[in-house]
Structures are given as C-alpha cells and as structure tokens.
Image (cartoon, rainbow, N blue to C red; front, side, top):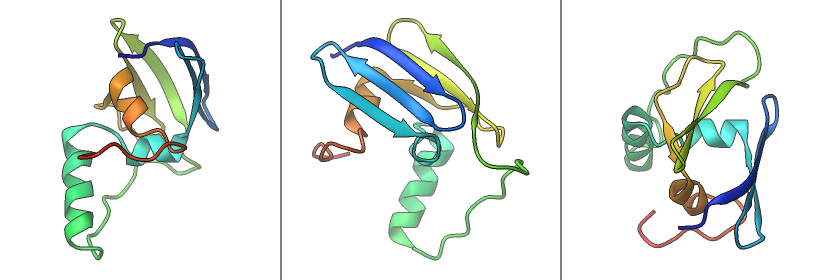
Length: 109
C-alpha cells in the first residue's frame, strides 16, 4: 500500500495527496463527496448505475459544497466532514488511490 507523504486540503477546492512513489493526486471536493465510501453512497451509486433516473437525496447545505473539516484515521485513512452534513465515509489511502481522477480505474472498482 502506498502511503501519503503530504496531504493538503483546501476546504473550498479539493484534496491534494503526494504519495510515496512521488506521484500526486488531486480530488475536487464534489468528486470526493460523490465517491464517499460510506454505505449509503455505495448504495446510491449502485442504484444510479442501474437506473439513471434515481432521485438524489436532498442536501442540508445552502451554499457551495465544501469540506467543513477533516481528520486522520489512524495511519491508513482520512475522514472528511462535508458542508452538507455527510461525515460517515472513511477514505482509506488504498481507496483514494483506486478513485484517483487522473488514473484509469482499477478492475472491479
């Protein structure tokens, strides 16, 4: 597993991670929210893949989506609390590598 050597969260823009292998990944805030590994978001992504007319849940945010806060979870993940109240996703380093917007998706993801 690749671990980050640097993490930079711009709450209104996105998360930048520099990995041990020297590569850098950038994840916009909206992208992270849509790809949250929480059970409810995994279910919603499955439903949307099966039915593109799936109704999206209402949000509790009146302004643009931001990261309200973030915290490291052990030495393997980061938890991001979004301005719409979503906070149940724990983004492991392996998961973040697998959803890197600039890399082709791994098989089965």
